Length: 297
Image (tube, rainbow, N blue to C red; front, side, top):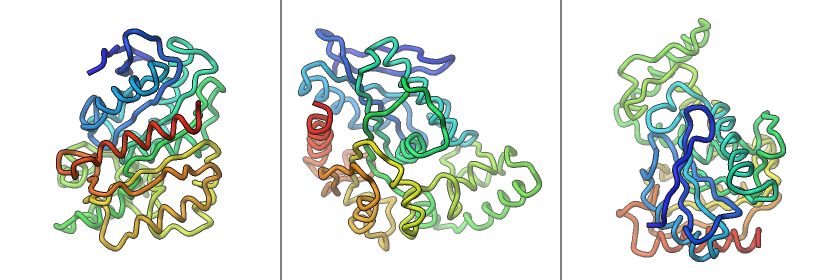
């Protein structure tokens, strides 16, 4: 494993940087995980970081962000809060680690992909120093469709009804009952966040398979930086009725700088764990590094 640096970039928020001890990186891939993720919970991160440092000759480093929504904090937050906190890290990297001309690519995994899209397409007015130069979506799945598919006990409709009632009563920040924990990975979750994650047309979902072109034009159509999307053919959170190849092709039509390197990685599961086929992680690494070389060197 490459040497790491851990630093506080804003208030109580920290990040871990994997870099080459012989060089000071100029550019950064900022990695943000999905629901329940924190440092090193996505297994491919250390190897990806090592290859980024090595193959890009120490000029790039991978930085894994820890935000308020990491681990079980997502239940009381929002994508908007995530994007604001990530913008603080991007600004820190340019001010403290690199320079105003540093290239920064935000790489989201799972719900981190929603964070990435929120950063690029939301109503935030970030300072110039917090701009992104590119983005990577790894496992850009719909939380709604995943929950509907995996909710074998059929708890979702009743919990959504509770959430909608609380929101209607002006209690959007009130926590749902403990019975919601089966669907929130044990995280205490507000009515707003539960509804945002798991209701169709909620604030969180950029990747529902049924979204029409007018919606995609307002999301993917607003992405003006190079965009790489990588999905796994064995992602168990994707319902059988979702044709990911067709869906990604629809996104491509709206994203102005969609990368031709985007693909479905054969044999890859949701986070390219040990259940993925041999070689799947190698493909992911090759795609990410090729994307950086093509777009930023």
